[in-house]
Image (tube, rainbow, N blue to C red; front, side, top):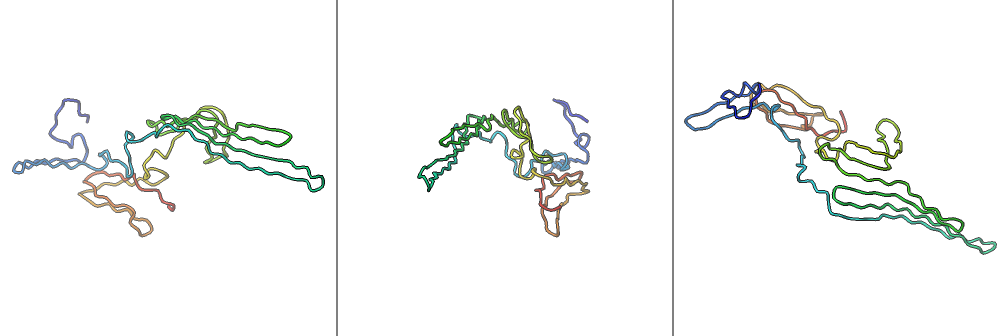
Length: 210
């Protein structure tokens, strides 16, 4: 049953199965019992998105350089060979611009190559990452394939620690106020208290063993 705006009710169990209410007139106290499954429970490790920070505007360059000079013992002539790899980026608000380039230089030639350039940002409402430019498909099942285009993919870094990876959801029904204990290989890994009614535990931390 749906409770409409401005409407009042006296029996909560009509709207929430297994819920109950009791008013003690002498103490002027209203006691509500609501099943855990009907509650809006925040997962362990949850941080409100309003507290997330995009960081400060910044620019950076990460480089790797190697070079060698080779001298011929017979005629005394020497040659040089150099390699430079640059990984640079700019952060501005929620946007991130990235570039990977390299240069090869010797006496015969100088070659500059841009390997990849992309623009990305977080999409908080979708818990996802938007990337435009040079990128790769995920290699979870098949080999990664490079492509140039637009990619929208889920980002587990936006989820609480307890929602990353796989862990089973444990469901049940409590007939009274109860303590629920979850054990694995003889060790207690989770414990909570629930009210009478249905409950669902969906914030177990993923474990390396099933």
